[in-house]
Length: 153
Image (tube, rainbow, N blue to C red; front, side, top):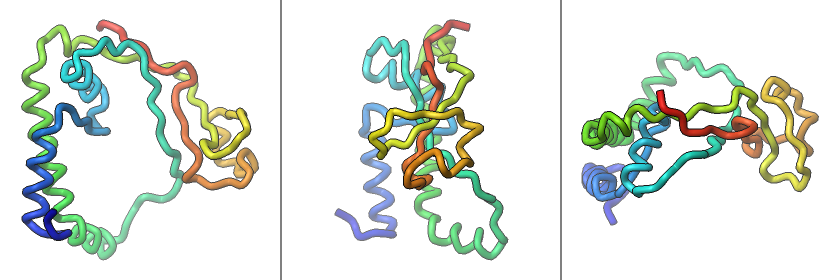
């Protein structure tokens, strides 16, 4: 293992990423699913994406941004490398593989993953803290009610 926060650790992370049969990038989720199907030679036809809800102001002061940037320099370099590697893998896919898209149910529901209750609610009700007991945004996840299905465009 390499020490945290070093160029040596970054180099090791790049080697490990390159050797992985598959990895996805959230900002390119549709393309990530194409690569998943291709890398694992699977007939992925239905999936349900799940995401956390965080409703807060995401604007940062320049000072806060600069501090975060300085602490995440190596992470950003790894992410940039991942995007390049991702693009190269994507370029290897056939046109037919790239024509497949997942279409998700427009109705989004949320639930408390740590609750024993089977209760769910619509996403626009998430700000109502009384829906989970006790309410903790880290435990609330959301996704399309009936998932996503493969569709050719």
